Amino acid sequence: MAVLALQEARAWAAAAAVPDPEVPCVTVADLGILRWVRLQDGVAVAGVSPTYSGCPAVLAIELAIDAALREAGFEPRIERLLSPPWTTDWITQEGREKLRAYGIAPPVAGGGKASLFQVAEVACPRCGSGDTERLSEFGSTACKAQYRCCACREPFDYFKCI
Amino acid sequence: MAVFEAVLELADDHLVLGHRISEWCGHAPMLEEDLAMPNMALDLIGTARTLYAHAGALEGQGRGEDELAYLRGEREYRNCLLVERPNEDFAHTMLRSLYFAAFMRPYWLAVLAQSVDEVLRGVAGKAEKEMAYHIRHAGEWVVRLGDGTEESAARMLAAVEALHLYTEELFESSAVAAVAEADGVLPPRAQMRAPWQAVIAEVFEQALLAVPQGGPVLRGGRQGLHGEGLGHMLAEMQVLHRAHPGARW
Image 1 (spheres, each protein chain N blue to C red):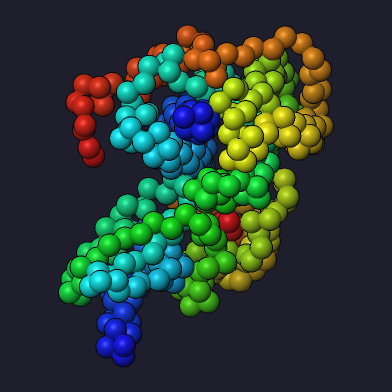
Image 2 (image 1 turned 90 degrees about the vertical axis):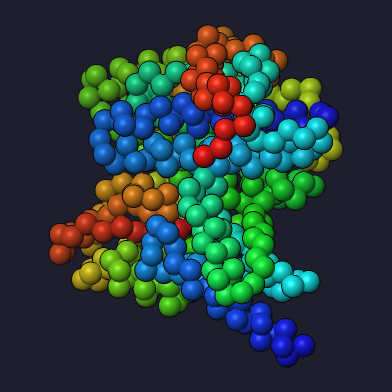
């Protein structure tokens, strides 16, 4: 039993270290995309939750986790988990700090419930000012919006809440 | 079989609208919108893929998402007419998205709360949130254009006149959808009328637009009776797969 737990921890560590292909400053574990890794009959099964329905990185992420587990000596299998749906609330505290340090404002908690035209207040990841404005709901990837800081004048990405 | 066909209707709505919106890629009036359009198209196509895969499993004939999307002709497509309407200009495109998303958001919420189908509940949990920001994005454009210049307001008005007659079909359940609804798989479409009207009324008020009342209704998509544009769209979408059967990226 202890050996199994140890092996599982090793498999988790290998899969968890995979960086997100579109936001490489954070890992799939930081983002909460990698839900669990279980050893079942000698196969390392990784539960992966896609972020957006049409996220083009889903396949790349699954292949990278598959490769990482293989490299660590496991026979991998990826299980795509639709339910419960991934939410930005699953991004770890460490992940949020990494995003901020990278220049991406982390999601504001509960912002996914914003009403029709309400926009959550987003703090600038560079100077911390709350005086920011949204340039576009859509940024370089499906999960990000474009903002501008009115205090330091820097544009930045905001990791949208869903 | 009826449930398979009902899920196929939903999948077709998402793929056709997703493809239509993707036609803006590289043509949108500014960079932000050029990014926004493919992003929203991907949401819809991603949802369609899961729905096609699920429909294929329900059918049990070995057809997967590619067979269902690429190897059916226009008469076999079951999407509502609204989603296949051509892009025309930004006013038409945004109003079409607003009409669709304002219907789908409460629809997915009802699926999430009531459906006996676990896969559909999984799809709904994601899609509901995406529809919320599609409403926001399209709604903001409808307001901007409706309450904009003389030119933009005239275009918005023309879009309302052109698209309103396709909205009624959203609330109608086909025979196969009625079976899926009776089985508790899908929620009754007519139930979405009140929440849909609430969103449209709120946006139109800010956009200085009047909500059309009554008037003619066009329907037929659920029976495979489509406008001329869908065949052209499918021809472009399917040509590669038909020329190279089984082609993979």
